[in-house]
Image (cartoon, rainbow, N blue to C red; front, side, top):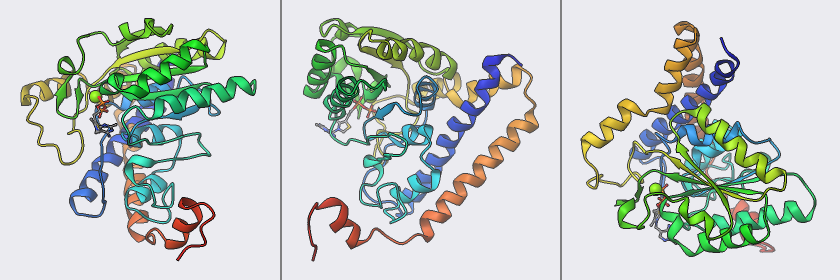
Length: 324
Ligand SMILES: Cc1ncc(C[n+]2csc(CCOP(=O)(O)OP(=O)(O)O)c2C)c(N)n1
Ligand SMILES: [Mg+2]
């Protein structure tokens, strides 16, 4: 087994964890156990997991509402993320944020942002702080293709480019903004053309193979860490589920979806690579069974936990409030 394949195994495990976690979250949502919105990451797992493999534990990550995969890849526990989706006190943010507002200071996950593009100026600020404090931490900022058209994109990239901040903007081009295809939101087919106007370096690649994502992300992360400035990375990916749980999916054909599932499923691709490199089927089955146990334990834990409490509302949402 080659070195890369050796590293692929834990990455496959994390991708499979995200996949199974979200399948169960979708089930719980349809049973009415999860309120609010739920945006699944299924199909895009290689992006978060490959990017995570390219950074240090002390680096910062910030993302949109499509945030479960990013948090799980960083190391937030399945229990704490599932509980957050269920609005429980044991959740990452004590059940006060829900699916779109995951936040995990310990693992340096700075959200979960529901306002499209809202995380980009924040990412510039986090990167500015690292530079100012002379720390070597890099900030990874995930965004969707649609977010490249909003004001926050301009603000974030302007400052990052001007001050050569240690940040990598990872644009996950999944071809759609809700139900609107890319060619109806921008005249560009290649979103990295937007980088030059802000003085950013850029890279663009297919995001279904997790090792490719890791290797290409490493180059951008190293550039940021070594003072070479920010990068806009466009990762070509695809979401297998609807925009959110209430998406009728009429904007794409069943053939298109099936085609991506057949040829570009990041979990299936990694699994196949592992088998080809000599990893035994039994070993993968055991790993998958372990993930299964972890996910079902997370669901049970979330179900059995107490709901978000009024006292945490007072203590953590309304600063200085005495409540009641
Ligand atoms: C400022 C703002 N405008 C509109 C919305 C509604 N909205 C939520 S997601 C979304 C589409 C974003 O698409 P994209 O950036 O491609 O991300 P994806 O959902 O594909 O990951 C829109 C318009 C919002 N949340 N915030
Ligand atoms: Mg999109």
